[in-house]
Every structure is written in C-alpha cells, then in structure tokens.
Image (cartoon, rainbow, N blue to C red):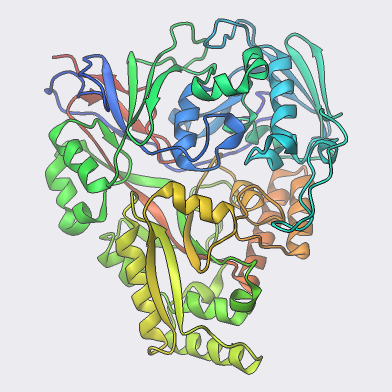
Length: 557
C-alpha cells in the first residue's frame, strides 16, 4: 500500500471529504452496550466475520476495526488523497522491484509494551501465509519467493482428498537482517509491491501471538492508534487510545466504540438523535427526497469513494452459470440508471468497468456494451445461449444479507428488471440471508445456489487491488472460483512491469478481458453519503469511505 520516500508512486485517489460540525452539542453519546462515556465516540460498526487477526479479514466489518488497532509499514494519508507514506518503515528500497530492503523506525511498540522489530513482520507473514493456519488472506503473500513451500491447496475442494503438507514453515524470500531491517525477495518483480504494504494483512504481530494465538483472538494486541478493550458479539467493540503510539497520526479521542446494529434504519435514527456519532452510509429510506440532508443539515457529508457494487456468479456451478452469453444477458437486463436514480437518489452512479473511479489506473468503459441496459440485446444473447444447448432455469435467486447495508431495495429492483426484461421466461427473486455472517459463510463454503451481491472497497488506491484479489485464479476474494489462464498471464505481466504507466496499461488490458467472461456484473460505484452527530468535529472520511478515526474530535460542552 504505502511506498518508500525514495521511489514514490502516484497512488492518486478520490477527493477527501471533510465536514466540521456546527458549534453546540454535548459530550459523547452512550457507548454501544455500555454506560455513557463523555470521552468516547460511537461509530457504526458491524460484526467481523472472523477473529481479529490481520490476515483473516477480507471484509469491511473486520477490516475497519483492524485498521484502528494496527499500523503497517506504510499508511494511506487521508489528507493527501490516500497517498502511501511510510509509517513503521523508515525506508522501502529496491533496485529491481524484486529484492526489497525494508528498514524500520525504532521505538514503535505493541499494546503489550513490547517493541516492534523486523522479526515481528517476518514471523507474521510466514505464519499468515502458512496454509495450515487457514487465513483468508494467505494468498496475499504469493509473490514472495518460497510461498509454494508454505501454502498448499486442497486438490478437490470438498472432495475426499486432503491438501498436501507444506514443505516448510517459512518462506525463503523473507530474511531478518537485524532488529530493524529485513529483506523481501519476490519470485518476480512487482512494481506495486510497496503500495500494498499498508494493507492490514501485512501488519506485524507481537511475540505473544505466537505463544498463544487463542488468547490473542479474545484480546488482540496491535501497534495502532487504538488498543482493544472488550467486545460483545453483535453489540459492540470497545477500544481506547494507545498513549504510547509512535505514529504521526495519534488519536484525539480517548475511547472508540464500534456500535453494531441489526438494521441501518435504527442506526440512522440514533445518528439523527445524537446517540451515534458517525455513519458512513445512509440507508435508502433516508435518501429518498434528500431527507437525510434535511435531517442532518451541515452534518451531512457528500463526496466520492473507492467502492463499487457488483453481483457475482458461482462459477463452480457450471450447469447453470457456465454459459457466457447467459451471464451477459443478465447484465444487459439490469436498468442501472433507473435503479440508481430511484433507489439511491443518484447517490450511486452506474459503472462500466470493474475498477472504481479515483483509483490510480482506473479507466471507465472496460465492460463496454455489456454494462448497458438493452432489453432486446439481452433477449438476443439468451437466444444465442439456448442455441448452444443451454436451458435457463425458470427461477433465479439473487442473494443478499438482510441485517445491514440497505441491500433489500436494490436487489429487489435488479430482480424486477431482469424478470421484466425476459417477459417472465426467467424470473429472478431477491432472496435474503438473515445475517452477514450466514451470508459470508455460504459464499466461503462455495454453497451459493444463485448469484449474490458483492462489492469491493479499495484496500489501497491502485487498479491492481481491484483485479488480482478478485479475479486471479485462487485469489483470496475470488469467491466464485472464476479461473481464466489468459487473464492470469496478463495480470502477471502487469505485476512484473516496473514502469508504472506501462504496468497500469497492462492492468487495464486485463480488466477488459473480464467483459468476455462476465463472471461478475459491475453495477455502480458509491458516492459518499455519510453523516455525523453534533457531538463531534473535524470529521474526515478517507478516500476508502471510512471515518478517519485519528482526526475526529469531541465537541466540548
């Protein structure tokens, strides 16, 4: 993610949105699940899918919490449009984009008081990559030499065969030079490597983690601006300021409460009344007629963020989803303009590609005509699929989670658009999972019986982040098990190209290849529609659509 000062990359991002509350308003609202705390802010959270281990979070709920608990080698400066800047690292240098020397600033501490050293990064990366540990983001270390010695895959998925035993517990591409220096040798040049290093997966882990990982799961120990206090599932996660934080962006509030709601309308009501201090996404019910702007006034925040919405096909069910014309037909049956107008009051805008605007290398239009609403062409594509022997199911399910995110309204609108386009020959039904946890469990277990809502929030502001993690064979967030060897080869070429402009062009070529397969349908990108209470000031939203928890302050009564 971040980059060395000696070889800065243009990781240009979206516009930083800032809103300053009008004077007035008392101290902090009541803590989520706890008693009132005058020195706390309450921020909308959601239940993390997995334990709070950096390499085990590839979804927003866990990611936003981990970002407050950990600081990596680099960080993405919200005051400089998400530009990667050094944090724990003092230098990240390479002459060939293959062998990297990383030097650390001294004096950084974990929340247990121990010092952050080079071995804490090396040990963390080796442990996280090792397939026996089952980390969701283990494949993020695939570029490091020796990764195949620690990471093995199950050859038949849910079948009887077991994954072979890893050959080693460490990657030979990682080497500790001294307490504050380590060397990373990649299997091939990767020009964007330093930009990735602010992603939470690359965080250090304290020595205590390796002694007792189970204890860490109950009380994670990071090195970030906030430290963990306690949590209650589906209710709250409490944190407090880390007084010995060495970073440039120390917290300005003493306590941070992630408050978890079962529906966003309740959260919005608390935002309006001042019981919730920040909400990064206004629910559709409040967007209609710009009600949220009337309710919040100067506390309403608008802008752009690096997030896009899509629906994904479970490519492991080839009988239903194996025909590309059929998948394209569904895409062209979706009236994106009407849905974003009526459901989101134009707060989200149709997208014609797989990369959100504002990201370095983003180039709209990769999807071409297949992301344009055209009922006649959709019917034609379905007819072509049938001529090839494909029989469409009479009913399709579009799955979403019902507990948060405001997905009910738009999934129903998408389903109605598809049903109407095909004149009832194919009926699509928006079908909820009760909770995000249940929804993600079915996705991770590859048990989805229909298409399902997906989305991507940038981990770092570069086109590579919207392609490799999602569409490369075996990637950590390739939930639909899509595989295209030609795409894999193109992505590898882009990874290896050391010239940033040429590398971006190759990534753009790879993105264009997705249009031929349409394994995931781009829908729209998110405009920012957020809000805060009168209790806080200096509210900044990062280009990634999250509250900058280090800048926000409490209004003093």
